[in-house]
Every structure is written in C-alpha cells, then in structure tokens.
Length: 497
Figure (cartoon, rainbow, N blue to C red):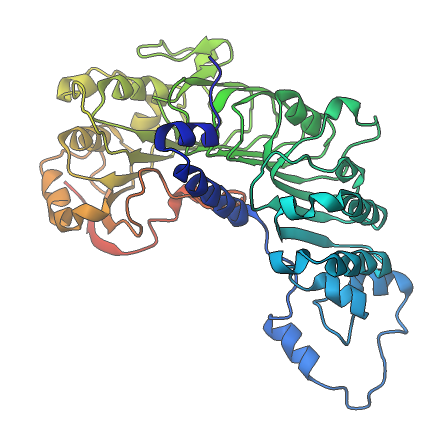
C-alpha cells in the first residue's frame, strides 16, 4: 500500500480541522527555510542614506558605467528617489488584498516591463493563487520577463487552498536562477517540457509541492551544480534515487518517506530526516557511495530502516566493511527507549558509524512501554567502536528520569573512554528533577574521570519532536542539532565519578 502524504494522514486521523493546522505548519516551515531578502528599506544603513540629503544635490550615480548601474539597481531597497513609480510599486510588499484588483495586476506587469534588470531576487509569497487563476497569462508573462532579465533568486509560495494548481511552465525558462523556492503547487508535466528547460546555475532548491518521483528526478538531472536540496512537507510519499556529483546537503522535513537511495553522491556532507510523519509503513533509506557524509540525523528506528550498500541493518547485524559508514562524525537519533523493539536497534545502528564523535539522542515519550531493556541488554551489546574509542560528546534531549534513559546514560558513561562532555537536557515538565539527574549518575564508574557533566533546562516546551531550523541546518559553520546547549546551564560538574 502506498504511503500517505502528511495532509492525507492529518485528514484521516483528525478530520478536516487538522488540514488547516497542517497547512499553517507547512507554511511556517516554508517561511523558516526562506532566505531573507538581501536588502530592505527598514535596514538602518538604507534608512540613513535615504534620509540624508546630498549637500550639493549633484547626481553622482548616473555617471557610473551601465553594468555597475544595473548591478546596484537590482539590489537597492525600494525608494521613490531611486526607482521609477512602476518599479517602486513592484518592490512594495504585495498583500492578498492588493492582488484582488485588476489594476494591481496591470501595475505589477508594468513594473516588471519597466525594470531594466537584472533581477537579483523576486518574492511572490502573499498571493492566494485561487484569486489570480484568471490571470494565468499575466503570471506566465511575469516569469517570461523575469527569465529574460536574468532573475537569480525566485520564491514562489501559495498560501491558500487549492494546493494543486499547476506551476507555470514558464518557470523553467528562468535559466539564470541560483536559488529557487517553490511552495504548495503542482509540478507541470515535465515529460513535455522542452529539452532546453533546466537550471544550469541553480545551487539551492527548496520544494513543498505535489510532484511525482520523475519530477524530482527531472529537477536533479537538470540542475548540474545543485548543492542544497530541501523538501518540506511533501504532498506525496518520497521515493527517489540520489545520483549527483554536486549535492552537498539534503534535508527532508515533515515528509512521508517511501525510499531514499543515496546511490552516488560523492560530495554529500549532510543528510537530515526531520519529523517524518507517516507511521503506517516503514521507509528505507540506503546509503551507497557517500564518502564525505559527515552529519546524519534524526534517525527514527520505528519509521525508517537503514540500508548500507546492499545490506539492511537489523538487530544483531554483524559488522563488516559493507555495513559501515566511516565518514560520519555527528549522528542524531530519535528513539523511544521504553520500546524494546526500538532500543534493540540502537547498538546495531551505532556500530554502523564507527567514527562518530558527537552523538545526539532525542528521547521520545512513549505512550505504551513494551518490554523495557535491562542492564544486561546493554552489557551484552558488544563492542561499539564509536562509543568506546571516538565519542567525545553526548547530548541527551528530553530526559525524564526514566530507568531506560538512565541505563543508556550509564552505558555511555562507563564505556566511552574519550568522552569529554555529557549534556543532559531536561524535558520541560521535569525541571525539578535536575538534582536527581546528577544523583542518578553518582555511582557511575566513568570511563573518563575528566568528563564534564552538564544539566540544562529545555528552552522549548516538549512538542513530541526535536526542534529544527531549516536555515541553520544549511549553514555549514553550525551544528543544527546543538541549538539547545548554549542556553540555560543549570549545573556543571568537572571530574564526574
């Protein structure tokens, strides 16, 4: 049976009201992933310059070469003193109410035609497409003008039902694009697009659209330098083969996963699976040729099985060269430690990543415990290379003081010889247990007596899933799993023993 989309599952589980909730959540995530415009009239520098009159009122700009003028013009904030009236109209925030009038459509069309180009960025994010369905020709004309004038960044997001209105085919003429964000629409039939359709300069792609597997394959094939791929709240279950010589970053948020096969991605460094929403079927994520994969998470044993080369990892899978990914240094798990079937997968999973130095564990709250693992289970887990030889930092999120959580922490503390820091983040409803967290570990015989133990309050209420920021995740200078530990330190102990 095919897996359902997030919207379909929400409708079945909670009724029509859940559709609005799910929609708002998707739009919020899309906006979170959307880059800030490069300029704004609200910026202090822009406002100061606009307010300051020239002493001699001499135009010192017009004498610049045309190419420089075009470059500056395409990046300046909206200001009547800089833009012609039609261009100023375009650069204003176009709200839903403004778009209901035919006059605004005409003004926007005139502004696009009057703008000399190039367009650095064009954001169309406040438009209910249902209201402009009668203006499809104008929208197509807008995209033709944007394509002709070399638009580099394009954000095109629908905020209201229906979500299956087709994206204009003219979109695929914007060959100068470097960044493209598409939200809540339907892919056109890529099979009938001309062979020239493609994005030879596209580096970042963010999608939350109704598309078939072949549509995603089309986008990957026609984007030869694509480095960053984000898919948020896919409206159908994802099943795709990742073959890319350029991709460095892939994140899938609120998606129904069917099968993700990383066949050949030699530059891939980060692979994130966040808030996978479909529970009815277990998906498969296979890791083939990804020699530079450095960061992976959050892995959920109940929702996704792991494949490495041609092997599906199961409990008690024997370690071999064909069942490990030695490049991963930062790993994140989301696991219900009260469920035996999930916990049984943890040792086998960790053995697949022998060089992990930083481990994040998000402890999900189990509604129904089934056969809690005991101390003997962890004692018989066998040799786990990353834990015993390489692990330097453990961050345990949403600690509730359960015995199953404590057993796992003791296992790490007593086995991890290189462990420098253990961070325990208390679930918001368990703040008063901060002293107990230390008392519980008092009797532990630490493998590294110089380990530093830190207990923190969770900075956010328990939402049932790890907090996530899509833009931080794409920032290679930051660790997206670690946005908790810089806040609210309650207790620090050196030389834990």
